[in-house]
Length: 109
Image 1 (cartoon, one colour):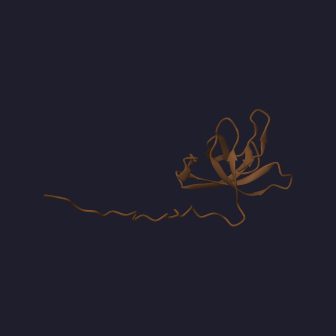
Image 2: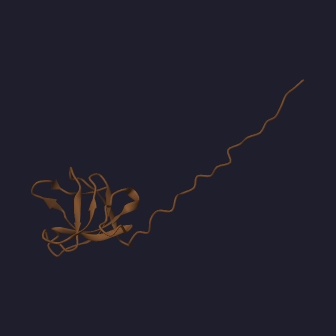
Image 3: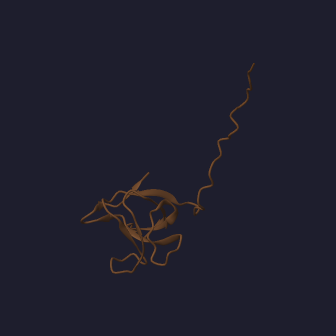
């Protein structure tokens, strides 16, 4: 006859995944705009785009311009939030805090 074995046990640990490197002092915001927002080379609507932040994705805000109309942001590709022109993994550029058509673009998490 029979019987058998025992065993088992929870052999896993709660491991924290390392998060992507973050700039000291950076604050996470999410894109509150209803559509993707370009990340621009300079704080000017005429500037070239260095990437695109998707609606609902998160960006790191590194600082602001003097008038606090523009935020300097870092967008990384790991969250699917970056379509970088150069195919890189992160883009740093500028994004307006508000837009006439889109309303508030960046919102604190």
